[in-house]
Length: 83
Image 1: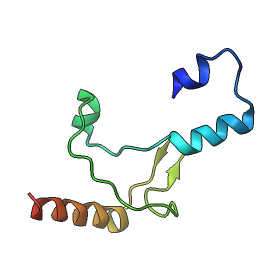
Image 2: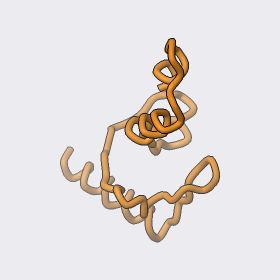
Image 3: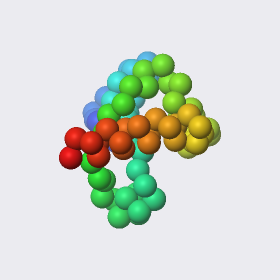
Image 4: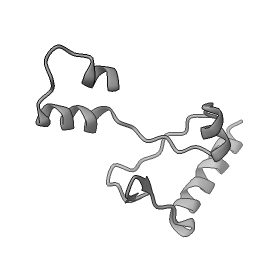
């Protein structure tokens, strides 16, 4: 993303930049150990099109055990059942 935005002859307009950013920037949720080692485990996509889960909190996001914790637990159970 950085190369696409900054290493170009003609700068993107503000609208082009935000359209590109919204389309291509994806959040990956990882364990602390995965983040430190820059190694990700299994990729488990989940639906959050409405942005209800993991709401933004400044530069990070909010984790609510009763909401996101339950979603993560169910996803982990599904993955475990399929292995």
